[in-house]
Image (tube, rainbow, N blue to C red; front, top):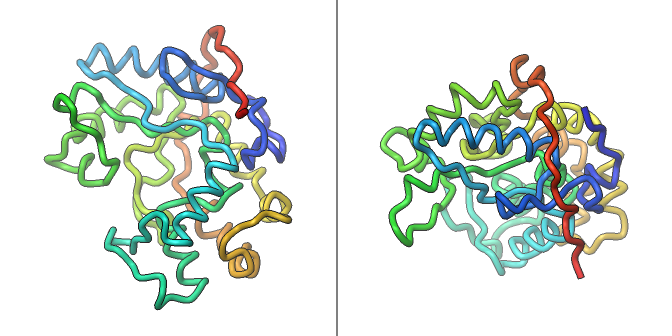
Length: 249
């Protein structure tokens, strides 16, 4: 089982992830091997699993955060309705962002173990997935994928951390997490590690975030589903040659 250090946990380095050409994304090599095996299994059921999002570094998460705080990206309530930040306190804006987007340094996508997954066979020509819960609910285009993942993902080491509303991050049925690495990572990402990553960073709403960091950590980092014993015990797969992730220019 890989152990991530503080910079890897917070997305400030890319030396724990690699480019996966077959998936057109960057992932932790152990998670990549497991997902490729899961993908082969899904192909036998007539599905074409694809990665909508994999590794995301600190700078990318910081840009998303600052854009939402400033209004360059939409700010939504827990039901997905637009909010007017002009009549909200900084703390209210912070909490609204956290429903849908992680604090920089606190995103599970920093670990390379997290995969937002779709089934390409369910899409019509030219159709783009929205990654909203209704797509994975009964009657949604990815409802068969949702059912299939529930019965098979655990054998390959995956679970869904945002399986339901726990009062923190909104449900994300598309989000798979590779438990043999992520299970240790979530414990290692302490408030102190997160605080160090945010030190001297130009973070919009930074004062409100730092004043509530312990609560944010408890509610949005640790308040997730626990992996099953099956997922945690998934055997390591034969390692493939995967090229190191390209570093940003």
